[in-house]
Image (tube, rainbow, N blue to C red; front, side, top):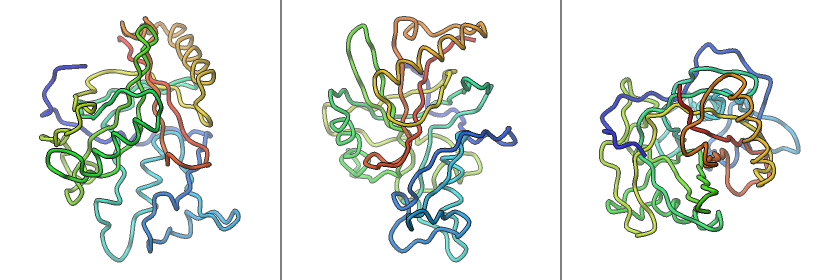
Length: 262
């Protein structure tokens, strides 16, 4: 982790003007839309009457959700917002992206089963913290694997509090200056970002075999481009990010993430 101040300026990870990709991921809009809120007709898909939100791989999760929730009559409450760690796109190839992540706070917990991590971090976001504050929904769920020690930890970005303007709507967005402290001893508040990472996206089930294949593909592509891995990554450490509803049969977007040295 990087011992840096949270006062650094940060911007949402929105890539403007970049080439569209043909990779498309689908998320059921009903898992995000609150009761009574309707999707615009252009965002509905009439497959068995289940409205489907179409999100493109290049930042489309954020863009698609924003379009789906835009209302003409009245502004939406911040509780309906999905927030993402602030980053900038540096490079995009057919095999990976290079992103610069700004400094941001996150909560983390060790786990054996994923549902244990979901419960611990979800409880923090729902108000089990020192301020009893409910936080806006954030993504992705980040899992960190360290093969040498066998340690597995789950991480979740801490965005704005419900009722506060989300960072994506501020003219000069900054990370939350004083995130609420956890009350559970197995949950800790830490600072991440301040790094350049290589990201390879894939869809479907993030099984151990599939994830390792994607990791090796990413490492080979970086080697061909002369990009050096970070020290921990050279020892086998990697992160897996997952987007979309946790309990859903819809196709999910996954990302293998490796810190690199430029």
